[in-house]
Length: 388
Image 1 (spheres, helix red, strand yellow):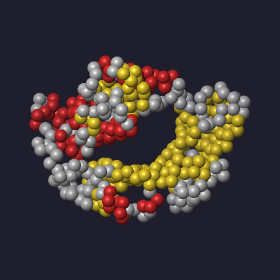
Image 2: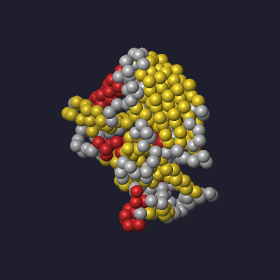
Image 3: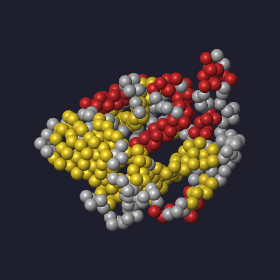
Image 4: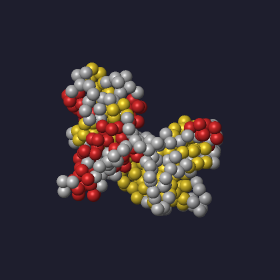
């Protein structure tokens, strides 16, 4: 039952780190690596950048699946032969990425090879007999010492034993927070990241809008702080999930977030907002994006207009609009105006990126141009917009 093991693969398809499998032989791991590499090769041949997160594998032990995620140029896979919820495996992979991010900073093939011993120790501590074991970052720091320049110098000098993990791990009564923390400046930061998906009519009216949100927290507090976070409209939140530090009975009763935070970065809460009715203005899209496409024989004329809906004193920064022009695009020519920023086009994926550094409420940013295609009357199919 559970996860058979973890395999970290580089962009050439070669395994970098592989945990000891609780069943089968190394040939089973190789079969899953080959299946994943074949899936990426097939996706590349079809001009696709991602593969299915769950791939069926007919291994020597019988039917199995290879649950996988991609991070930059790395592929992380978990073979599973038993009856296991795929979301359980994918959630573990995301937790593993978060831990590696905190330990290594930049997760790459080079950083993993340079810290191979630390990565392998983390895998052994986080996965026990196919099930997640120790996944709290502060507890892992007590068991596996994070890499540092001082440690590397001692390792080269032959004195690596001078730096070791805490002699009494699991000594803290709170699993996610170490004892004896001290800071000269006590501070806590909250970042709210929201993703909006919806259907907008040609008149700019929101037909159906859904919002997914996440509260990212970074704490640098001494001792054992007890924090109470109050939200303005907690009743509009649904499908909430919290970090284990949050006291759920207090949230269920008073709709306030009471918690003793971990030290450092963590995700405090995930939530979802859904517009109650199609005519509701509770989740109005904070911008207007109008597209005019003129279909011609062999080429198309495009006129994009973007403008925030805020007042004159507010605006948007770091706007990134992605437009999938489809396959068969041979050439493009674009002219931004009105503070329209810059653009780039990826011929392989057929995606046009329009970057706007800053947009105010009283200025409309435009992007006009043409693109040629080998298909007749090819209509762009997908918009994606990121902003902060």
